[in-house]
Image: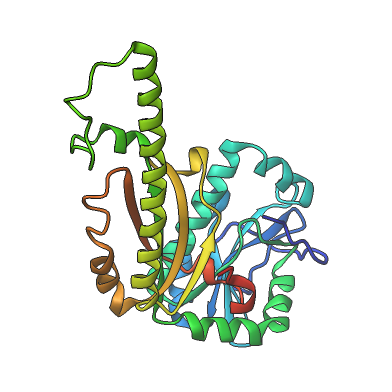
Length: 292
C-alpha cells in the first residue's frame, strides 16, 4: 500500500460536488478509488458517494477513461502521513472501509478497475496524466473485467472440530484388550490427537484440490493469495487455501452450487465462499496478477 505523489497542486475548492473542472487547492491532494470508462454512468454516480474524511467523490476524465477521486488533506496523505496512518490500525481500518465502500458502490453500477489502497496524487492534473499514460493498459483490463465479478474461496482445517466430531473413528479401540496403565493411555491419546490433526489437514488439502477442479471450469481466471492468519482469518481453524476467482456474473449461482455442501461430512474441514466483489485481485495485467 503506497502513496503515489506527483507534481504540483492546483488551486480550487476541494469539498463541493464536482467533476474534473473542480480541482483541489494546494492543501489538498487527489485520492483515487477506481477507474472506469468515462460517461454518464460514473458522472451520475460520483456525487452520491462519500469518500475519505467525508469528502465528496468526483470524476476526473482523460482519454475516454474516468477516475473516481476525492480530495484529502495533503499533509495527512503525503508519503510520510500515509505511513503513519497505515501503521495506526484504527485509521487503516477507516481508510480501507471507505475505499472498499466507494469501489463496491461503483462496481454495482459500472465496470470499474479498483485501485490499490492509498493511491494518492498531488492534484487532478496528475490523475489525468496517469489516465493518458496508462490508458491502453486500463482499457484492456476493463474489457477483460466487463461482465465479471470476484468470488473468494477459503478452505480451513480445524483439528479441534474433528476431534469433537461425535462420529466413531474408522477403527475404534479393541474392547477385548486388557486395560492399560495411565501413562500408556496418555501416550495413546496423544498419538490419536496427532492422527486426527494429520487427517484434518490431509482432508482439507484434498478438498482444496477438489474446489480448484470445480471452480476453475466456471471461472475465467484464478489468483492464489497467501493464507490468512490471526485476525484476518474468519472463524476457527487454519486457513490453508485462499483463492480468488474471476467469474462471469451469469455463472455466479452455478459457482456457488458447485461448491455447496462439498465439506459436508468431512470432520474438521470447512469452505467459505465470499462475494461477489469488485475484482480487486484482477486489477493488474494477468502476467502480474496470477500467482498460480
